Picture 1 (cartoon, rainbow, N blue to C red):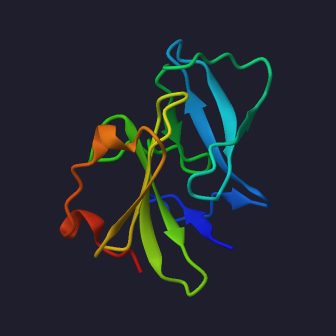
Picture 2: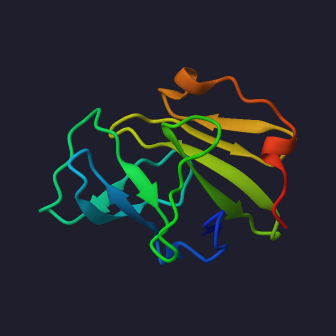
Length: 134
């Protein structure tokens, strides 16, 4: 099983079968959002009182240090670190737009793409931006 870390505080974001994030919607309301840790699985869980609409921008935050997870690649993409079974780190970037399925995972040498909307962001370069964290 993969673990996921905040790229700012390096604390673990995965609990059980979910990655836990704090999010803010366009009305600046905050909530917890649980996502599947499986790349390409866009299942999510939230409290029923937190309203979001397809196409809405959600800003993702670390629930532990409260740092924004907006990537320096594109303002629509969030960034987390994934540790694989061997302990190797990978950068994972995913869309913060509700209903937009775009995920990118890189080990610093190659980029693996998932999601039918990933073509909107396919300008990744390998290099310093994708350095290993550990």
